[in-house]
Image (cartoon, rainbow, N blue to C red; front, side, top):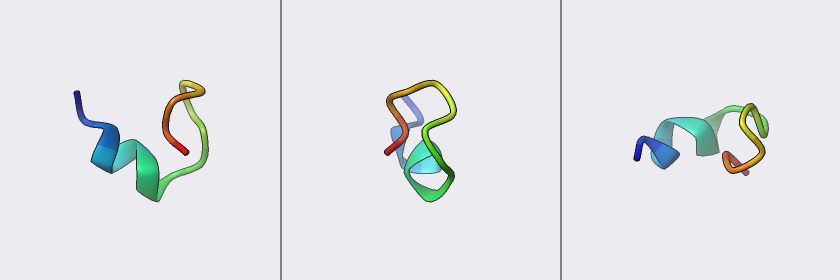
Length: 17
């Protein structure tokens, strides 16, 4: 999972905190 990319951005999918 590319959670690291989501972490930089807002909660796009609700899991990218």
